[in-house]
Image (cartoon, rainbow, N blue to C red; front, side, top):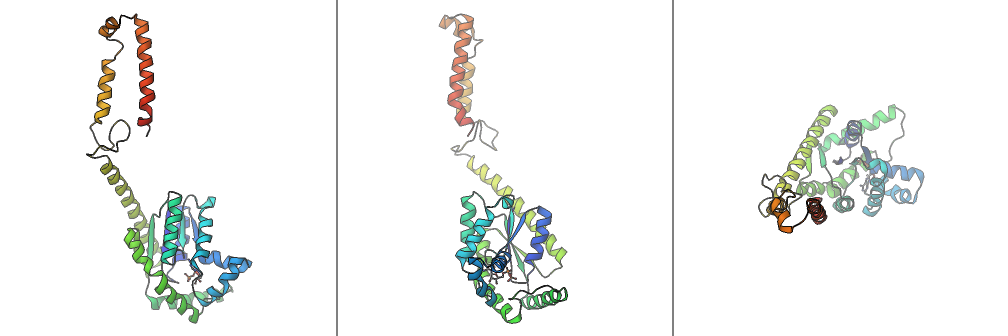
Length: 281
Ligand code: ADP
């Protein structure tokens, strides 16, 4: 399962991502965490991102896209992943589509957590208080001034993704103001619905491809059709005419019984060789 969690800072993406990790056994890929790790380790990416993050601005697309592209190629992401904090711009979303398409993959759902902006400020203030109480070190961007900038960056650069994904038909919007449990249940329902629609769409697509035109038939008969394909009927009739037990063919050819059986076997072999590539398509 491949999911994108979309929502402004403080919407609860991280909390819900962790619930999904436990429930589905897939990895959480948080670009914020990856960038903070790069900053802490003093890598070249970290050095570039440090000040941008401290101001509440977005790190350049090419840097983040490269990090994600590398990360989703790792073995633990094979079973699926939850992207938390990525994509954050339309070019990042387009780059994600391209990198998944290259692997023959696509997103299963994009879950948007909708939250009242005034509540966000309060939520983050609470989070900061609790972190202080626990003696945890604070994020340099968790202060009222920078928070304003993070919210502004979301409104200007990330909110357009809602329309981008709505256009693709993958968007599921959830009320992020409910309790953690209720939001988790709503996400569960949205993912189940997305999976159901995907399966139905695939079935409908297969049915349409195998309908009246008959051009894209698979195997012996068209999938979803009770009638065997015309060519298959023709071949079956021809095979019936060639039955080894036919007395007439034996007398006509003037062969002995065993010679006749050998020749039929050879014919069947060569027919099979011609037919098999079509049948295994
Ligand atoms: P939050 O969602 O709470 O704002 P994150 O931990 O997701 O925080 O991100 C923290 C900071 O990391 C962002 O403000 C931004 O500077 C940078 N960042 C994270 N993800 C991206 C991204 N996809 N594109 C650009 N910058 C990013």
